[in-house]
Amino acid sequence: MTDLHKLAAVLDEAARTGRAVPRPEQDYGVADAYRVQEELIRLRLERGDRLAGVKLGFTSEGKRRQMGVRDVIFGRVPESSAILDGSYADMSRYIHPRVEPEVVYLVGRRIASPGDALAPGAVAAVATGIEVIDSRYEDFRFSLPDVIADNTSAAGYAVGPWQPYDPSRWNLGVVLEIDGRVVHAGSTGAILGDPRRALAEAARLALRAGTVLEPGWILLAGAATPAEPLAPGARVRAEIQHLGSVSFTASAPEPAPGVAGTSPGVPGTSRTPGSPGAPREGS
Image 1 (cartoon, one colour):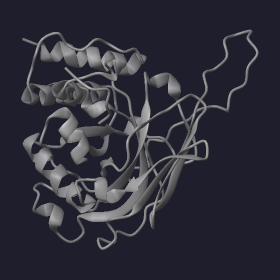
Image 2 (cartoon, rainbow, N blue to C red; image 1 turned 180 degrees about the vertical axis):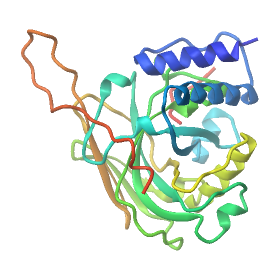
Image 3 (cartoon, helix red, strand yellow; image 1 turned 90 degrees about the vertical axis):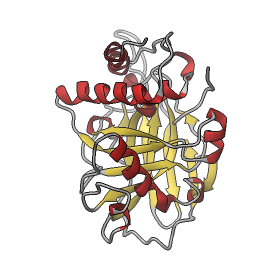
């Protein structure tokens, strides 16, 4: 039997130190995995972190088929993982990061049930986002319970300018660029077949986890394209039709003392853009 509190502590240490850990040797189920995730988040909140919102994973049919699952998965988004649009992401905090473009919803009212997600004002605004996913397991390999326990590989997020929410605009073109080169193009229609379903799905899974979605929280609705590895120094940009763009630069490693080298600048993050066995796969 897996010691759930010990696993949460191991994953927390891996995230704080940027050092990968082996997958658990013992088997455990999805229900226990969500208990590990809850304990993992509790450890972060005890250190003064706060929640900026929630996220969904496995929102594409292809990923669910690959993992042999039928349902999406649910994770929490800590404020400390925010990256300011146009700034630098601190690569020292990651292990083997990947990036993917997301639709981001701003929650407009308290949502305690899937029905609440359909009420007027449930979505206050929408934006283009980039999520950094970074499995804490060695070689980015995990089972379904493993990735849930690891908070769905959540590692960072950037949100572009908020736009008015128009539910009639849901099947929109998406582009992900690295260093000015298009690496993936897709459609928001890949998210659950219709990204407008994301808030109700998040509410359903939050209810199962014993929580509610709070006004001012963000929802990372899921990836619209495959994830792309993030290398030090790379400039990442995502654009969604009608919603605008968001970008950041991955900080290069600082040169060792006495060694010549250059750095793109002082990396920085912002804590507030969200408030106004197994394949190599992301969340």
